[in-house]
Structure formats: structure tokens, C-alpha cells
Length: 282
Ligand SMILES: NC(=O)c1ccc[n+]([C@@H]2O[C@H](COP(=O)([O-])OP(=O)(O)OC[C@H]3O[C@@H](n4cnc5c(N)ncnc54)[C@H](OP(=O)(O)O)[C@@H]3O)[C@@H](O)[C@H]2O)c1
Figure (spheres, rainbow, N blue to C red):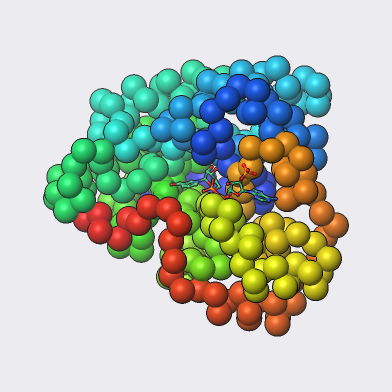
């Protein structure tokens, strides 16, 4: 197996863009993010906002004396675009959107749209998609390739057949879903772990343990959740549609969660998922 690139150096905090669909909201949120030094933007083909994000960045970057190479774009192959031909066409479209290359491209989901999760053909199709990503990395069009929503089972399968190993994994990650087995796997294999839904899609911001820890440090619950992810070694990509929240969530004077805070948060790990669950996908 080839390691095309060592573990990538990526910003530790980025902006999630799931459900950001209006051009004005996207522009305002990205402006806010760029103004506080955020340089990583997470999107996906199925969010249907890649063009709007690209247009906003093209108009905003010069205001911050930045160019395309100063930012990191993460995109994901839509589950409906799995398989050789569809994946190639879809990747081309994403590349075109973002100036001919993307920094990180992930297989969004181990399954395939419209196929039952126990259909054995899924394994063949996701392997084809991986080969497409490998080819684009070799061509220099994708800097880092990886997967999302892969369990240890899916990761082991991938590690067994890949020619280029994945260097990024993006999975749900917050105190109620701590993915200890996947984190360990990533550490062993030099894969960067990016955690999504850090606020539990908003729900964890009112969790009483998180609120109490935030009060203790005189910060916001969102700051506690971002800091927790960072202290666990994950890249954190929270989402908000409100430009002022980008700043309050991500620009805070540095504080450290102490071992008591971390222990309390470790105890919240009840395996609750706010997003989709890949465990049934063969
Ligand atoms: N790979 C995958 O399958 C996958 C799946 C899910 C997500 N993701 C990525 O991860 C990103 C983040 O995850 P997520 O979008 O699921 O949710 P999230 O970041 O955990 O939570 C977002 C929610 O929190 C609210 N919020 C944010 N800041 C707040 C604040 N200061 N006070 C009150 N509410 C606040 C937002 O509402 P407002 O808009 O009203 O602020 C929104 O409803 C996504 O955008 C996407 O890029 C990837």
C-alpha cells in the first residue's frame, strides 16, 4: 500500500455548511468566518451549495488578501454518485467549482443511494469510488482523500484493498457520541479525525453538564463543545446560519477544560447519534 501523502496539516477548526442554502446567508457566514481567521470550509455535493460557496469565496477572498491556496475546501462524494462513472463525473463538477482542485474529498457514506444497506454489491461500488478518488489524487486534483461515516469495519475493509490510504475521516463526534474505537483506529493509521455535529445539531448547547462547565469558565456552551473536540484531537466543524454566532462560537479567549470537566463530559457518552447511522451498511 502506498502512502501518497503523510497525515495532512489541516486547520483544526472550520465551518460546516450543511443546510446553508441561501446565497446571502452563505456570504455573510463566510465573511464572518474569514474575518476571524477560519480557513477550512466543509461542504458536500448533496448540500447543493458548492457553487454558492465558491462564488462567495471568489468575491470575499480578495477583501482579506487571500487566494484559493490559503483556504481548505472539504467536499464529499454524494451517495448517489458512487461507482466509477458517476463518481468521475461528480468529482469533475466539484473540481470545476473550486478552481480545478479540492483540498479534501471524502466518500460521504459507505452505502449507495437507493440500494438496501445489506446489498453485497455496495462493497463493490464503494471500492470503485475509492479507486476514482485515488486516481484524482495521483493526478494532483485532490490533495487528500478520505471517507465519512465509516465504522471500524468499513475502515478495515478499505485499508485492505486501497493503494493509497485514507488520510482524513469525518464522523459524528460530540460528548454523547465519542467514537472511541474509530478514534483509536485513526490514531493507529495516521488518519486525521474530523468531527461533525459538534453541537449535536444544537441540542447539546442546552445540556446541563455542558452549561455548567461553560458557566464555570465564563464561556458559552458552544465554546465548551468546540474546545472538547479540540482537546480530544479532532478537527471541529460547527455550523450556524448566523454570522454573529460564527464569532461567538469560535473566537474566544483560550481556555482549557480541566480533567474534572473532561471526566464529566466523558460520562455523557451514551452512544446517542443525532445524524445517520452507518452500522447497518454492509
Ligand atoms: N459527513 C456527514 O455525514 C455530516 C453530517 C452532518 C454534518 N456534517 C458537517 O458538520 C457540520 C456541523 O454539523 P451539523 O450541521 O449537523 O450541526 P452542529 O454544528 O452540531 O449544530 C448546528 C446547529 O446549532 C445551532 N447553533 C450554532 N451555534 C449556536 C449558538 N451559539 N447558539 C444557539 N444555537 C446555535 C445552529 O442553529 P443556527 O443556524 O440558528 O445558529 C444549528 O441548528 C455540518 O454543517 C456539515 O458541514 C457532516
